[in-house]
Structures are given as C-alpha cells and as structure tokens.
View 1 (tube, rainbow, N blue to C red):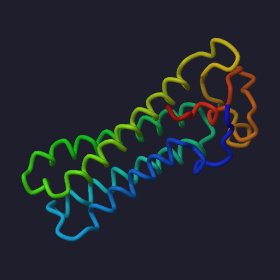
View 2 (cartoon, rainbow, N blue to C red; view 1 turned 90 degrees about the vertical axis):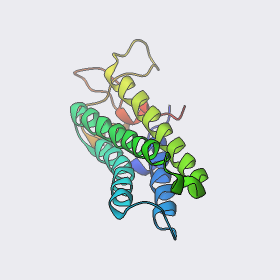
View 3 (tube, rainbow, N blue to C red; view 1 turned 180 degrees about the vertical axis):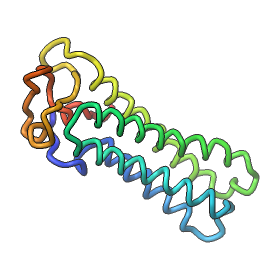
View 4 (tube, rainbow, N blue to C red; view 1 turned 135 degrees about the horizontal axis):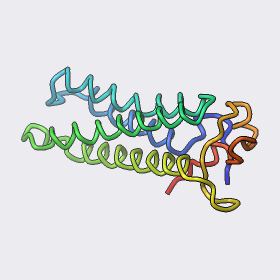
Amino acid sequence: MPKYQKFEDLPAWQEAAQLYEAVLEVVEGPNVPWTATFRNQLERAALATSNQIADGFERATRDDLLCLLRDARSSAVDVRSMLAVIVRRTKTKPIQPAVEKIRGLADSCARQIGAWIRAVESPRSEPGSAGAGNSEGADARREGATSPATNRPNVAEQTRRR
C-alpha cells in the first residue's frame, strides 16, 4: 500500500482539487446563468471538500480525521445536490456538459471519501486489509507506524483510488 507523505499526494485530495478547478471553469466563465449567491456557494462547497481532506490528513487523532472526512463528504454531496437542483433550469442547458463533469467529480469524491471513512472505522481483520486510522499523530502517520493502542495501520495507507 502506498504511504502518503503529504495531503497533496492523496488521490481523494487530488480528485477534490479537480472538482474545484472544474467549478471555477464554470463560475468564472462568461454568461453563467446562475445567481452570484449560487455560484459563491457552489465554489465554497467544492473548495471545502479538498480543504477538509487536507485538514483531516494533518490532524493527530482518528476522531478528528473522521469528523473532517465526514465534513468533506458532505461538501461534495452539497455540490452534487446544488447541481441536481439547478440542472432543471432551461438556462443551464448551454453549460450542461460542464455541469455533468462537475457532478461526476463530486460523486467520485464522495465515494472515495466514504470508502476511506469505512476503512478507518472498520477494525483491522488481517494484515494488509483496510483498517482504522492511527491516533499517534502526523509524524507517525507519515512514517507508516501503527498505534500501539489500536495496532492499526496509518491513516494515509487507507486512501486508495477505486
């Protein structure tokens, strides 16, 4: 399993960064048929997804990681929900392909983060299986150590692209 040294290497974070870039491509474009409030909320939800993944990776405890991963997944779901509502508007038809791209990225982020959460929450069943996170801090996580209290592999090993 790969060991991630920094959050920028996490596949889930990379996907979330692509999500934000795709949102920016649309909201910064000319003649976007959405209100400024809607664009702002969509941009914030997309950016929150990657920020919360990064913050969770850098946290020292398993509980902090899980809380931030749940928030990240919620932000990705917010993006999907907002687009599911707005796609019904006829004015959105000209940017439909971009909207579908963003929805796909948001769905992928939510699924990856959900898988990571399940892996962190589940007890380690056998060597090499996806287990729970490490509560020994960022340095131990980066070193690939296990927690003496839980004997679980580091959190960074849990993120794998489906």
